Length: 122
Length: 108
Image 1 (cartoon, rainbow over the protein chains, first blue to last red):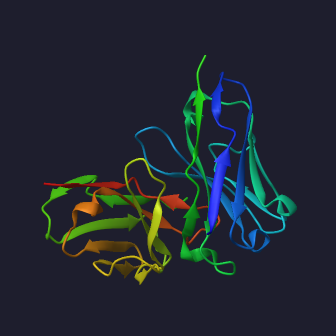
Image 2: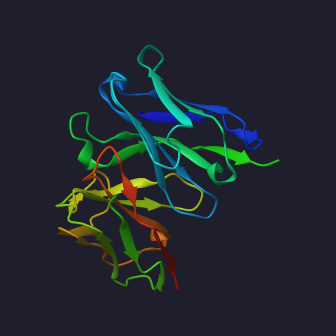
């Protein structure tokens, strides 16, 4: 079964740091670029970051640029999101998601994890 | 940045009704438009890709159309299990993806 499972969420104070992990199974992880998408409580979806198959390129939403860092370890079938200088507005459920096509990124995100919750509060 | 505007933000319809949700892009995006369904407490699920292609395993009562700036998701014969929020997402500027604000579908 194709599966993604996130971990690492929790309660952190404003200005603090947190590292999220996402572990993949059931597909050839190294063939796919990966994304993080977040959803604040009761609100819509916001794309956060992308990393290419070989980690050669990374992209970030303007709202997290300079504060978040995406990375991956293909040997461990895992992608990570290092979140620094956290703000109140970063509180959300964070999902990792894979593209439906290894060669065509235009065809949407077909597998999502259940998400890991990040709460930012003093 | 490409902005995506969905309407309505919520709707209520009866079982068996035909439901239409629209999505407009701030600039032309060709057919680079995907639709997702998110049931309460669950992760989003890909329904339609490239504007009009049904993802494998998705019931045929779901369909998508449009190109350029204007797109539509149609649910023919609404079912109780279709209670969910629906999001459009542009992939024209991939990897920088943008989602619409969502449409909450309730059953009367």
